[in-house]
Length: 213
Length: 280
View 1 (tube, each protein chain N blue to C red):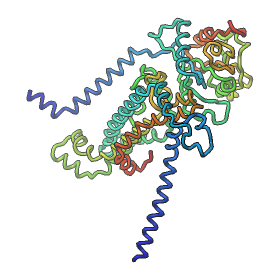
View 2: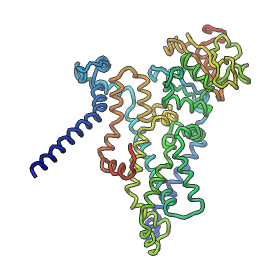
View 3: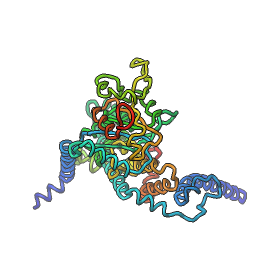
View 4: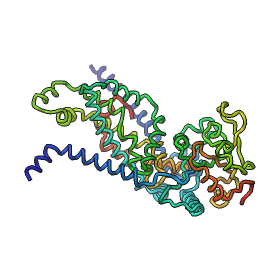
């Protein structure tokens, strides 16, 4: 008993330090190995004012439609983003910076916003060129709905490149009441799941040739 | 003599008038926020000076509406926990690193410290993507660790504490050494308690910056259950952008924890600013 008292008196800091470090290490290792990290699909809906409940319903319906197992990977529909890249100073906010971080990290699969906003984002090179290999085949047939922009990077192209798909009149508006003035869907420049974007388009009832499916 | 006293009194009166006016100017935005929170939307968007006070009664229901729409208890809990862990981590790591750089001699000390200084010179936004990738790969998105992660270590804190340790007399440490203290004991029992004011300053700065941090919680927390007050408020701004009373009610509720913290630690806040020469 005296020995334990002696150890606690002289080594209490070491015990607390090593104990705390061990708990932290176990916590990090547990999350690193057992937490769901990957996404099935990550979409950002820009400038949406509707309540969370609408977005939650949209997400649940999409999960059911695509048949995703969310215990394996996540589905994120992030409607907490407000910026307008088409106007001067419209990106000087934290929302745009976090959007840019999502694009650069490759987590962002799709972004939905107004045409002018999407074109401005596309011009800066943050959206996938839908006609570029190896994605051209995937988006083949959607040409009627393509939205084009001329990138700032003249070395990449001086001609208009398709960076978005017009989804005006889709279920996003008809069923969920989002974007009544029309919307365009763009694909993140470094997306890892372009095929899931097609599933999302199918869920929104958008046909490649124009009009609803 | 009487003339001198009268002059001093007049100077005092002028100074008080100036200070009262300045205090009033400082309080106007805060009062405006609370008064707007108690108005109707029509009154809030009216520019008429007659609408400074609510005309149709005090609309306390705006607070109820916001409270019911968002889980403020969760937002408070997440914010306070994030502040707590960031302060603990920042003070703990900066104290040890500051002591090492300030008092110990080891090869590469200056080079390593210059690396820390470089970190202070680079805009924080540069680190966002690598930090996000690290947290994402660890599976820590939407978790408390994810929120605390950028605050685990602090370059500013290390610099502040290093300066604090350098200002202490060498004799104290040498006396402890003669008494048989090893490095750990000298740090823990002799030097660290003497840098208490720097540690409190760092704690206050860390707490205020953590409370104000908006971008990081917005990136790592997409769930309403894991987000903080600042990110929650930003979300409300999107949803209630045109409903100013609701927004202001939410803002009033959001600043409450910081006001409570300030009232409790008022003396330390003032001392902290004086010690570090910084501003909040």
